[in-house]
Length: 380
Image (cartoon, rainbow, N blue to C red; front, side, top):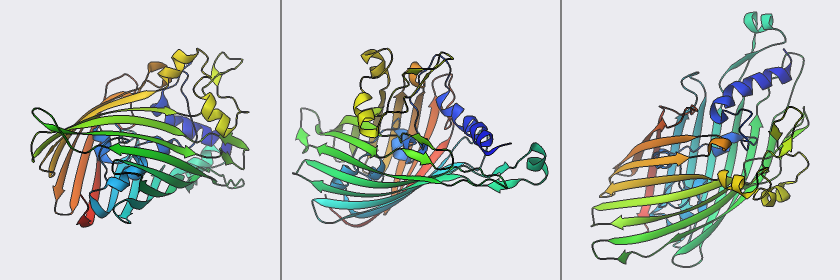
């Protein structure tokens, strides 16, 4: 079996569960799709959203501008997500994040995300794979660095730099390949109002945006194929109902869209594929108007998530959410449940996903968890 065929069969087996494409669907796909998989259990419990929720240690993924509003001076977080655990037991996504406040108005953060695709037996022939396979462990990872700054008491912005490496090579004994890498930047903003009194409660308004993964295409040198990375726009808003000093309910809504070209080039077999001659920046702007069926189809490329989080005494939280993606663009629809516990300086968060469509989710019935450690003095 050639390297190209091995890779094609392998990737098809992994990602058909995530995208479930057929001739009637025009799903927008990119390289390194692991960058679009949420890792932290708090956001996962809210329907996979976090651009406008309150600041936490995992803000580096959702909206780095939120770090300017973190309650603690310093923190670290880690998460572990089993992937496709109904089929295999060695594919997982892990995340490590560290942040530190510089002063009352600014903070910086670093993050590492690692996606392991497990052990893959490969070889030149089926007999070699059976008797003397070459065991490979393809993986992908990214390194992040972010800086957040308050522009006034209620609004902050952040910039982020990212290095991305994709080592999906499945070389045989006489054919070698190299990993692909690229860099990307992101810009984000976050608004948090002062606490405002109402008739029976007080409240805080929140809003945020994040444009992430703006960068060159990913190119695998051995094949010369260049693919867009998942440049993503996220917009969100929310409101915290503060009933008293112990009880708080936060509700939030988030919209997201991949800023890469839609599948708009018609093949001989009657299906659509992405244009190959479009640059990164032009692809971002064209992504709002290049769908074959016009603006109506562009609106279908937006996903939305709705979530609610009840917090008692900042020590216990219950969460629920719903995520929706149009049937033409992937058909992911699922409910999520979650819980959070605080003990001393440590936060423990759990989440669970329940599919609401016939398209199976790679994370269906998967329990995700994350840990957060808060250090230093409280800032607010």
